[in-house]
Length: 359
Image (cartoon, rainbow, N blue to C red; front, side, top):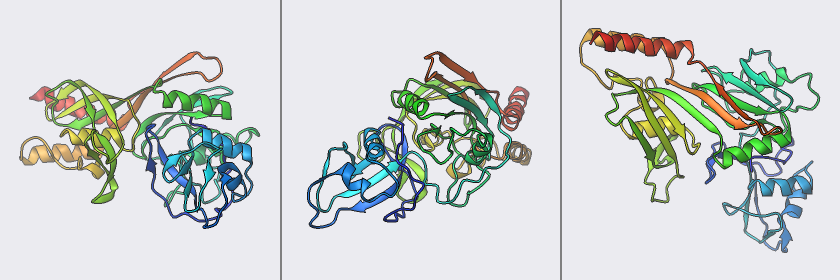
């Protein structure tokens, strides 16, 4: 379940220095918000009672809901609220977004709202906007913009994890996101993401013409042991990383690049970026994964100048979350949304179309 019910607005009882996400079988990233090691001599005690005594301002009901949402982990495994703690147990309370260490400041940042009603809001995020406040990005984020948008709505609390963004996209990826305006809406939408019944398609420009026009990439994704800022692909049969599946379809081969449509079966961090690099097709201008260099084509100065102009035209990875579909959490109606490819990426694609046509 994607509903988070713990009140995390109070300081940690025991400070955790975990700032990177953990990875879970359900396709989401998890951030640790609370961390405890059960004391020697601790008598057997239900974990909901144990946590209520230690997390200031929470309730047993909220802890129980968090356990149902698999947000309570003991020694790395989700447990039910009736689990009895043992001395030496390592308890983690995790959530699907980073902890807000600072106050969320409402900022009048324009939002491209595609749809809104009493239960959900669909927004088209521009490239360059961080979704959640975090280290080095405490303002100017989508959450700050949502705080302003909902400032006159007494029922929406931007710091309450039971509502808000249900999923995320990277800072330099543009596209559609859905926001739950009520706890029930977030629970419903979260379950849809969990059961993979949502529809999400991305458009990407990648290096290299696709010889196989359609395909499926399967490979576990986890932190690169050589560089913790990068993700890496591991064997789908191994224990490293978590399972990830990406389906792709080639829309156009354009000389030395290709326009592809990607559909996610899972939602790992940087999934499309790292999966496409894994099969030899890094996203165009993806600096983190090597796509900001000339990887295909000739060595002429005119071609190098053309590619540099392309990098300037779209100064970020060429990836856009184009479509989003889900069932309305209250009415059950199928809701499908489509967004235009943003101008920087559209101009980039057109440049390559003209280049390919001249060949």
